[in-house]
Length: 364
Image 1 (tube, one colour):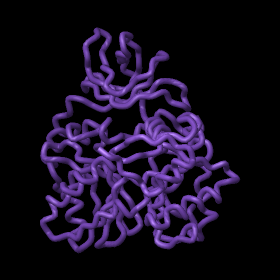
Image 2 (cartoon, helix red, strand yellow):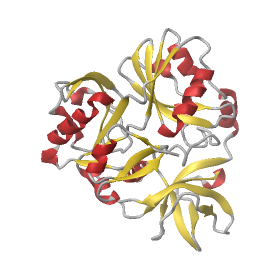
Image 3 (tube, one colour):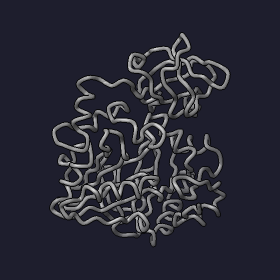
């Protein structure tokens, strides 16, 4: 299958990016090295082009009702200029996708979904759209840049009169930045390093990208690929759809009870309510290696007797901690903090311990 190209594909190639297939798109996986890019974001500032992500607009007096029906979180709590992390569940209580819900006005919302699920999510929401909510898929014309790191605000502040320090976490404004009007400037991100995500029409994307890099010269701003994006999100314990959550995992198993609100009815809310009352059989846990081993997706997790009790869903060497870290599902009796578990790495059995998230905290 031919890979789709994001609007700035040629620019990334000119910057020396290694392009790989991801969710049906040719995406920059790295420009220099994953570790160097990871450290640039943690310690300084870097920019991800994540324009493969999907964006839908939902408009009309029943837009909120539709969101409430398909999403687990309570979007009625949103006010204009606020965003919310949520997920959509299928009839069995598995996760269709995790997403961000932006309230643009009382009758207009933007949903930001994973690239691999754009068509699936669209069809799912459309199927539940029984009240004639106007739906618009703006994914193809929307570019998304994540400017992340401790110096992100200093760089972007040069490009806008909006006081970025006054935008709280999970809030956004629509404003002018880099001379481009109508950009959504959102205090969100997938790195735990602070910063903003910028939604801009593809026609102005290259202009904005270049303006950001010009403004960031004094901070040695770097373009960052998906390789570092994965290690950054894993250090925070953020779930990746297709690895840690999917159609077969419930939000309660995945530790996403905090975005699962039973104050309303949504798809399979009765099943999840029952899970909450009775407890789940397996849980997503965070673990840290006690040895030099590197955990990888699908490696078996065992107990001290060698019985398989689960499997790794995400794993890497943490560039900040210099030790193996991972997420994985285990049988619930093994899910308590400090529980000793074992990871089967090829022919070796390596010891690990269940720990609290995030793996890495600023200043540690």
